[in-house]
Each structure stands twice: as structure tokens, then as C-alpha cells.
Image (tube, rainbow, N blue to C red; front, side, top):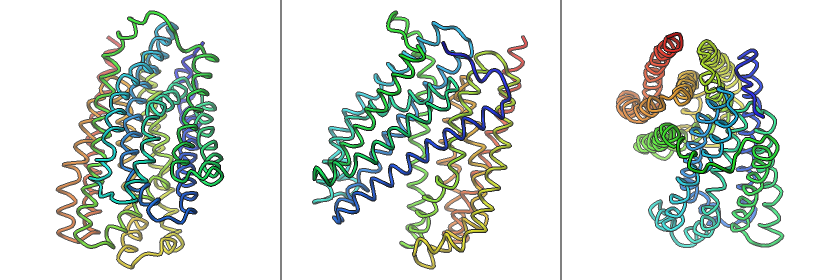
Length: 444
């Protein structure tokens, strides 16, 4: 049966082991996505590549939605594991999967029905729109599988199962890479073949995840159905704010694209390249954010607020050390990195700016990721929603506009930098105050 692994032993050790495992999982996701693009590019049909571009925002929406549901699952399950109550753990895991399906299935049906209209709104037309519709008509119905995949992985992380939380993603990514050329070229299915490969890989991850979580670890229960809904309120308290947060992030990205568009295509290209470098260079931060929550949740469930505080502060130290190291690498290697993209001088200026100091913004983005994970796993998920929505609006719009007015596209980026600093400091002050308040409540 499950053990509250994170409530014992060195916090730094848990953070390191689980972050490495989560990083490996994220790398596999990137590699799998790149493989899809590579194989489809071999078809030599421009409309196919354009179709993937039109399908991208819709698929990103489904992924962020499923991640939001998995965070709610992680918060519910990790707190239950911290209590070390076998029945509560089993019911929490089972209830989380049921709730994720209750939420995701109606949304999936709406997306499946309206996806052609959404592609049209995004500017898709002609053969490109046709290919996009073919791809989405196969992939979108598998969104409930994706929700289960990601939630199963979050349960493994909540339990401290580093190996299987990594293997579930490695299995899906590897299978997708293997099946892509078979369905695309051997079976001559083109873009529909890539979609089928994606669905099969998701199905495989679900089978493997349920084998580990339900059969091997016994973390699910198939009785007392009415009791599952006793957990609905706690699940929704996290799921709704996190999903609101997920919706705010694309808004901020879209606004920055709008600001850059005023300075021409080169500014848009430069900003786009910077936005593609960021998740690769700072992948460790996103992995850390996925781990902080479960460790906080277990110790919060066990009422060990000293370990909750240690987790948050150790994570913040990790953020600073990691970001300084990555920023130094970007600064040293910029002469090799920038020419790779073979773009205009104007676009290159933005990439050089990022490598020459702008990348330090991720110290403050990382602080926000850590504090938001903390909020979501101690029953204050609405704080993370408020912070992220504020960051995407008031922390971005006025600062970007003012910066662009003063110094063009470079000024816009520095404006966003300043907004990120202010928002991260506010979040950190709130988190610090909340830690002290919760600690006092435990003492009482």
C-alpha cells in the first residue's frame, strides 16, 4: 500500500530525484512532438505542415486543460497520502479519475463538433483546413485518454514513484515515434496516420498507468460510489482556479504577439523564437513545479508544516541556482545559438537580448511557479489563479505597452520583465505569510 514517502527523509533529495524524473518525461514530450513534425515534413506537402499549425492552438488548449485537472488530482491525492488513511487514499485516486472524465468528456464533444469552425477562425482555409480537420477529428476524441494519462502520472508523482512517473511518458513518446513512420508512410495514411499514432500512444499510457496505479499499487477502489462525491468540493476548489489560470496564459502570449506585430514581421519572428527557446532552456523549472505540489501536499496532509516550508524555500533556492546556470550558458553560447535560426538582423537582436540578460526573467517566473504549486496543494488554489491572471493582464499589458513606447520591441520585453518581478514578489510575500498562518493553525 502507498506510503507517504515525502514526509520522511531529506527534502532536497526528494526534489532532486523527482525533478530529474519529471525533466526526462518532459524531454520525451518535446522529442515526440519534434518527431511528428519531422515525419510530416518528409511528405513535402506545405498544406500538411500548415494544418499542424492550425491544429496546434486547439491541441494546446486540451493539453493545458488536462494538466489543470491533473493538478487538482495531485492536490487531492497527495494530501490523502499524507494522512496515510488507506480508504481515503483509494477513494481520492478513484474520485479524481471520475471527476476528470466528468469535466473533460463534455468539453471534448464540443471541441470535436466545433473544431472545423475554430480552424476557420484561426485562418485555416482550403486544403490546409481540410488536413487540420482530418487530424483533429481523430485526435480530439482521445482527449479523455490524455486527461487520464496525465492524472495517472500525477498520482505516481504524488506517491513518490519517480521511475513509473517517468516511464509512462517514455512509453507513450517512444511508441508514438515508432508508429509515426509506419502509419504515415508504410500504410500511406499521411497526417491521419500521425493522428492514429498519437491515439494509440495515449491508449498505451492509460493501460500502463492503470496497471501500476490500480493493479500493482492497489490505489483504486471500486465500491462506495456515492462516497466519491464527498471529494468533489475539494477537487473543484483546485480544478476551477487552475483551469482559469491555464486560459489566462495564452491570452498573455497572444497580446505580446500583437504588440510585436506593430514593429513588423521580424519582431514577431524574434519573439516567437525566444518563446520556443524558453521551455527547452528552462525545462527544469517546469519539472520542479510538477514536483513541489505533491511534496507540499503530502506534508500538509501529515500536518508537517516545517517540511512544507522547507520544500518551498529549498525549491526557491533551486530556482535561483538553476536559472543563473542556464542564463550563463545562454550568454556564453549565444554566438553559436543565434545563427542557427537563420533569421533577420532585427529578429536576431531580440534573441541576443534574451541571451544577454533578459533570460533572468525566469528567476521570477520560477518563483511564481513554485508559489502557485504551493497554493494549489494547501487549499488556496484561487491565489494561484489570481496571481497568474493578474500576471497575464495587469502584469503584462501596461508594462509591454509602456516599454514598447519607450524602446520598441526590446522595451516591450523589458516591460514584461518588470511585470514578472513585481508579480513574483507579491506571490512570494503571500506564500510566506500563508506558511506562517498555516503553521500557527497546526500548533493550535
